[in-house]
Length: 430
Image (cartoon, rainbow, N blue to C red; front, side, top):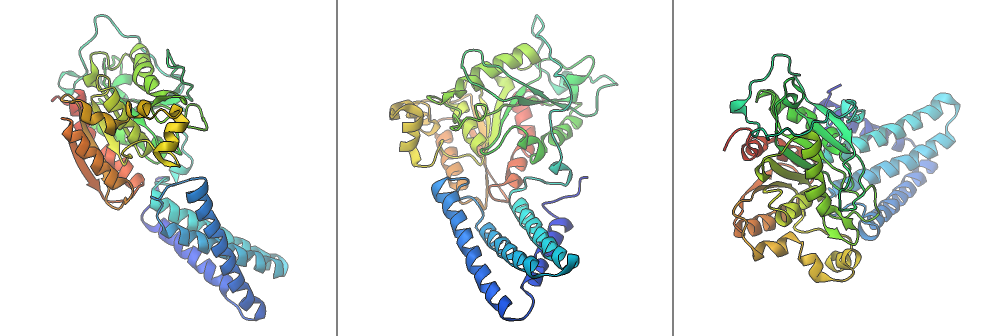
């Protein structure tokens, strides 16, 4: 069901039903109601304030990019739930008790709709139930000798029975020296890879997710398979092989930030182990680094910059979508240095992109920094990244898209730049 949840009639209807439910819960007369409404309002305000303190000052469940109007939605939802409980306890008969439960449910549904419109996590009803990685066993392929030339649209003739769409597979990419533990990655293989005979030596896009998050977010909220299928349909079935690895170190308490640190050698995993596995098992990206790109949003955008700067010989092409200027954790740089590097600040600055960019030149690297115009937290950091990358000799662009720190920007940041990526990766030529 491709009925949109972030635009159109559905979110408007849900928000209206929520408002009507709050109004109904407040309706009535009598001393009990006149006391209940102020008490519910004060209680809801206290719980909302507590949520703010715990989420943003104590546990840092999310950051300052959270749209502040969502706290208003949260207050109204808690307020409505208090009133619903009162009506349920004082109601008589099954209908009397069912109505406040229904009203409470509609208010929570409206809250979900408001949050979803802000972030775009579930763009359609179907995305609520999608579970990527169900296409069966990954069709592996050993590299042939001699290595075939890089796949390019000008030299590719698709067979008549080529699939119309690509497929998504789940695979564990083992470490081969980094010691990095990983949950399974998700891999998109384009129609040309699945054709018989197939296109050989396709380029590779390593796509990185956010925190909190997982590889599946790119396929549900980001609708990656549909985006890549659309590109492939316009280019004779050709598209990059897309590998979306797990960045959490198999759910570690401290995510390793795409750095080599006391928390694990995730940078080595992403820049050494993963490419070696892809070449050996998918026979893609075999010619040279010009066939490889890294991209990501938010936490993954920060990682894409880190990898492009620390491993330009592996990832000379990058797409930083709403990333930070440097890896961060609650407590700031000093806390990060203590947690990840045992207090050795030099060990961090030796890997931190903005510290490394001024120390060398990157004439062969190119990237795009994408930010949301309404993203007051990450947009200024993106500008800082762009300025530093340009000063270091990178061929970089700075793009502003409508939206905040949400999938409205993250999805478009990739989809809008696929032609540029394909040109850098050789599919469309230089």
